Amino acid sequence: MWNRNRITDLLGIEYPIFQGPFGGGLSTVELTTTVSRLGGLGGYGAYTLSPQEIYDADQQIKSITDHPYNLNLWVNDHDIVDQEHTQKQYQKTAEIFKPYYDRLNTELPPLPPSFESRFQNQLQVVFDIKPKVFSFMYGLLDADVIDRLKNQGTVVVGNATTVDEAVALENIGVDVIAASGFESGGHRPSFLEKAELSTTGTFALIQLIKDKVKTPLVAAGGIANGRGIKAAMTLGAEGVQIGTAFLATEESGALPVHKEFLFSEAAKSTTLSRAYTGRLGRGITTDISGELLYATDQTLPFPLQTTFMAPMRKAALEQKKHELVFFWCGQIAPILKYKSATALMKSLIEEADELMR
Ligand SMILES: Cc1cc2nc3c(=O)[nH]c(=O)nc-3n(C[C@H](O)[C@H](O)[C@H](O)COP(=O)(O)O)c2cc1C
Image (cartoon, rainbow, N blue to C red; front, side):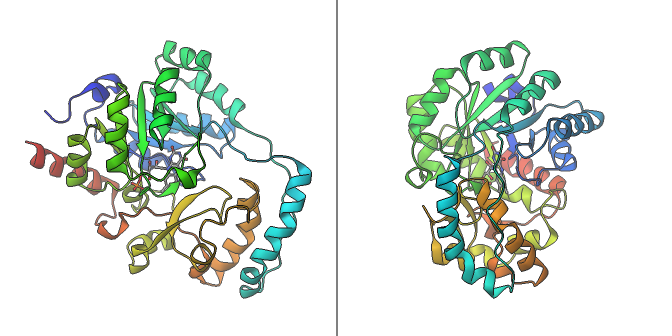
């Protein structure tokens, strides 16, 4: 039985198929519960939410299903060094982005207000609501936090983009490692080296990590069908995490125009860029990401760059100048078929069953 292994036993799920959690308001209760009810692991990304919003989402999810789901946070949610540095960087960033703002006849915003990390308060909610699965990205957790989570019955999942990160996660005692390949949509969750130096593809990454760690692995990045599941599991993963294919479904929180783009010719070209948030992430190539490429040292620290770019995003969407909007997207988008999460999940299971019988 391909679908019975350490991960399904540990989590109490039927299929080792994780729906990738989406931060930034793109996760929905409907998507998470649809995937969990069909025997996979729905994911809910909560790093931008207040503690109360996380309680509310958890309540809603638990009122719909008692199947396990995965609550996800970012342990490191800002890159701000100091005010003086940020002020200097603002002058530079404003100059670089002015031509794009001019194309939208929109005024450059002032330096965004300072940002207080939310992680510690959010973590308190995880202790209160005790989700069956808690996943985190952008770093490590203290050993006492891991112990507390495990003692309350929560399975802990960490994200790695390199072998060294996977070893560090194993050393702190996570239960499962999600190995995030370069193909993935969304941010690169690198935390030891710069993200630009942590760009191994999924199918190399899981083999390299498998050689060095004993912790069960979930392959994330570039998987969207049964063939991808079989390939990842043949190479040593015990589960897969699928993001872009679920982001494109009706149940996700992405804008309708974003979903249209995921199914369009434009999705043939994706770029890793820092231009839109200050951290490296993959989306459909835009005039900005194409021209500035990695934009290292050209952007404000995360998350101030997101705030700085918000008026541009709004104006570009209103004026339908989509060549300036960064639509998150992984490299696998051109093979997407399904617009319903139920249909996608059922086909993933059927195809994997068929191929691995
Ligand atoms: C829009 C978007 C937002 C994401 N946000 C998060 C997040 O907050 N936390 C996280 O652990 N992974 C996040 N991811 C990564 C996904 O959970 C998943 O690992 C990844 O999308 C898998 O690669 P794929 O897009 O090729 O399927 C995000 C991905 C996308 C596309």
